Length: 341
Image 1 (cartoon, rainbow, N blue to C red):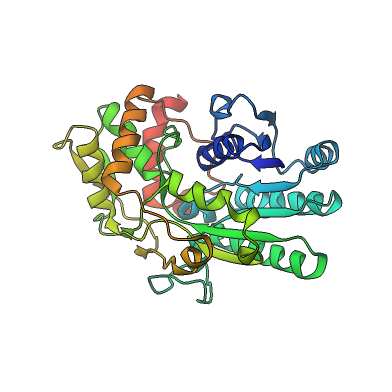
Image 2: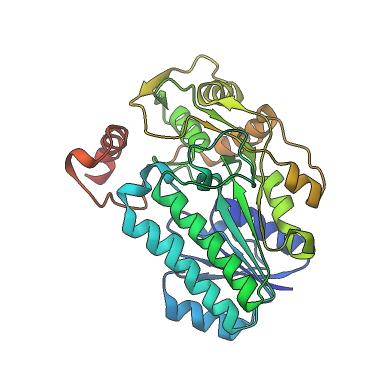
């Protein structure tokens, strides 16, 4: 099949592109390279540098390429700061997605896969289930849920099948270590290599299910051939939970520096317990083995060491100022200040 992967030079998207190419599909990647790298796109795939927010570019690309399948992974993915960058969040995550949906309808795309997020559940009771009523608590979750609902309308009224995957805390090789706002595992490895203490927000007691990227991609790649999954959102990720502090301790163990200092940065206004029930996905796609956190972090540590310490670079600017900027975000801005000077 001829496939488009948006965000295919980024973290999860590049792993998905690699998998689709290995499975024998032809792949075009659309990525603006704000958080990704052209080096992550495997040779057989074609890279088009551009943004999903460019309606004209998206329309021309779909008309020229006539894709069979779309895997939409391009996003601004940083829920805890999303309310401070509302325009960026909604332009990218909502209107960019609408551009793709419209182009897919015009060119008779046969399947649309959407990378949604556990953020749609907000402060819902854990484990979070697909049967729960989603109530996002941030702008990022709002946008992701709106796209899910638009895809449901599109399938029901206009006949384009879709599957949405509500992913959470995905980590692994090729994660963006430059960005100081997001990707905690990558941030921690980079801090170790830069000789900086690991910065944990608040007490570190936040509960998460850290999900190894190849486990997630394996499920996602099979969605077009799984009609029972069409028209529905699915939770996908690990079933094992850890606190953020426990994860930080595992990161420094994987890096071979078990005594590396950990400091506690200002707490963030974030959901305290986030993990999902994945029995629905496992019943449709078949069970999968969750890569243990220690094993996934060992693989990530090897890649991080080969990559080396990375200079910090934010891919966006805060759209508000003054006291409305959260204290934890001001903490990040101080880390960025020497780079921006």
